[in-house]
Length: 333
Image (cartoon, rainbow, N blue to C red):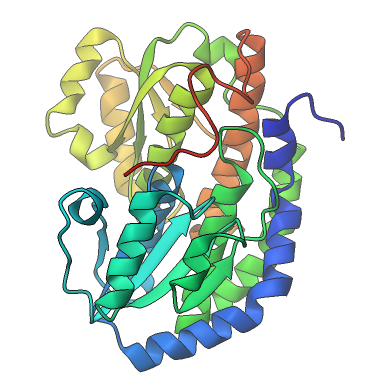
């Protein structure tokens, strides 16, 4: 199929990216699981910004629910701006990045390595200087990504995190779900849009609600709404939204429902029903089929979402590949 934009073409490459990653990285995941077992970490520390940081939120829920390790998100400025070091000798550190070149991310990686952490980089650019810092380098195998809005590299990061957890826990069901996922995503790509320009064009702002793994992807959804469609979007846990932010409904805020059919599904649905009862306009995302594993469901939702907002942006007269004022690689101190 021929796509009008780089963003759509790159998002649609994801099934092939995941197959490539699975073929290339199996031995890396096996080695890494052995290194993690030897290091016996007490906690996980995730370094990343933007979309990579959002992938880390997914990693937090995944690692805490499946491996029982507490997970913290780095504040890169603590080291790169304030010059402070952290006690990370008992940590498993993940550095997540598309390019692996931002000075603050590199500074954090060097600090973590010097402090004795087991450092793992999940990076798409295999020429990244972070490769020479970390203990284990995990290539995302996404290939060049030209569009400013990351799509396939984000999904490749989630897939790598799932693969690492599957290797560490020796969970056969997760491994089988990962084998099935490329075909499932390929099927989703052929399906009709769920979120359309008709829904989005009237919006100036919206709220994205999810719970657990749904909240993890809601951060990325909100970012893409801003980047690609120019809509002010804010992500909340559906539970947290009821603790004050629900007053935003007084200003006719639309709700994007990032529902994931996992253990949080029942309580999330109840909270969506509550905001609907209060008059909110609800836009659901792709409904995941019941035969797809809960841990891979978020990737299925995101695959359809990326293609939907690319099409919606074009129909709204925007350029999804090059949003005004943005560039592909952002380097911060």
